Length: 193
Image (cartoon, rainbow, N blue to C red):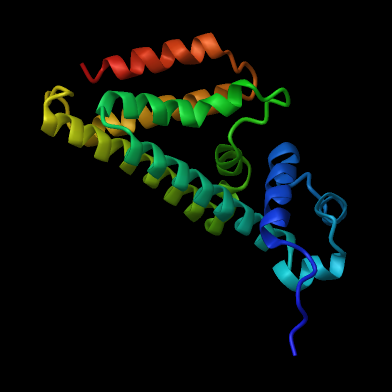
């Protein structure tokens, strides 16, 4: 008979995200995880088998939460340009208020781990594709309605806007300035006119 878990996996993944996000994958030890997650080493190994598997699960959880927020913004917005702005702000607003200047968890994983780890690289690429696709769908819809000029390819615009977001996510590690980010968002969205 399988043992029942005496902890909430979602809570553990939330704590793991915060720890990996703050310290990075390589600097996080198994003892750090045991201490931060509040579960025993044996429970950690029984559930996740190793640090790498837990890191992948943390990235997946982060990605799912982000996708839910993206879909909520898209579903609740009527204006294509306003939706693009809200998506850009979703990707950057939390970074501005972060006193630890952790940057974006997914971008950090891309820089630190993905070049040497195919599984992490695959997750990062999926995440980027989903964000880019969200921008593409919104821009295409805006072009079809006439709100956004049809002079540029929607996919090229989506890639451009996503690149601006990613730049802000990296910049947030050293200088997360709300005014600068706001100006970047305004200028980026101006290409849709």
